[in-house]
Length: 418
Ligand code: GAL
Image 1 (cartoon, rainbow, N blue to C red):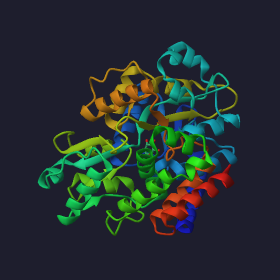
Image 2 (image 1 turned 90 degrees about the horizontal axis):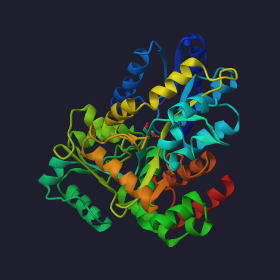
Image 3 (image 1 turned 180 degrees about the horizontal axis):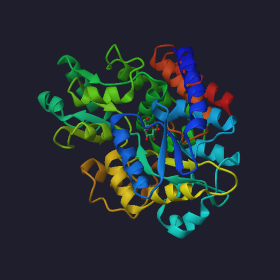
Image 4 (image 1 turned 180 degrees about the vertical axis):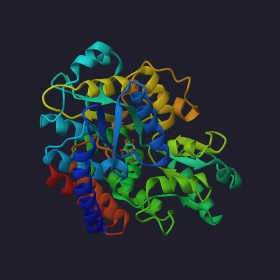
């Protein structure tokens, strides 16, 4: 399966490298991103329309593939061909990698003019500034330790929001007995890793999560708590439908939206799909933190890297960065996207109950030392380590290892990847 995907990506790369060269012109911003689902496209339109209102055209370069792995492959090809896009959606350590290669424009002028240092939290600045230079424009803060539920399905089966792992398993058993798919899941490595963020946090706890995924401590990676995390993944594997393999994340979300499944464990971009389908939190769906992680937030911030276009920030790049960080855009975009604002000074007034909870959780976690970078979405360790973890987690989920073997494979893979 992965070799097929590699071929597919290679063709996509070839097409977009040439296409990009043909279509971008001096007055547009050409933007590479992976926001291709219904909810993501709706959110992206907020940005496109904002720029068009300023007379800046948008040359779109979408590269489908949740989590951005395919997009980064296309980006590497474009940069190698000497044809970098104006701006690129990026995550965490990938941004730092490009900055350290000297590929990104210095945004300090617009950042200083607009006071970014005062309103962007330290947790994001760690992935947006290198050696004192702003190298990307933070768009939002997503987080991954969420569960999304179809309210009618839970009510029909007498299921309350689970507070503990044991409650969650009991709910899964009830749904299975009722003939409802307990967990909607897309069988792709980045999705298994996204689920693993929350499951590992629930078994290792915040200190263990930090030790294992941020500090890469072999003791934590090889711990009994990590083995229990893999055992919990086996329970989740036993509660997905037989056609999960290869499913895109938003199609799994659709299964919860239409009542075919009870739960989905996914980042809060899933909320954008519920909203795009006209669903309301508290009425049609519920959002809650994965049981055992109610006090933590595993975050990933989407940012736009501005690729150096010849030594200076272009007028269009500065306008794009400024548009992204404007308080009005920060509210309008994140309300639709399912994420929360990157700025700390944006009111939660326009946000629904899940959005308000997301903003409150983020502030509380940051204040209590419970805010951690998502391993699955590039905010805990460099891409080589993240991808090594992906391989072990997805191989285990697909039955190649038992939990004890998976723990050893994880320790070995991380050691080799550093
Ligand atoms: C994440 C990204 C989100 C969403 C998600 C699914 O990495 O931060 O904005 O795109 O992937 O593709």
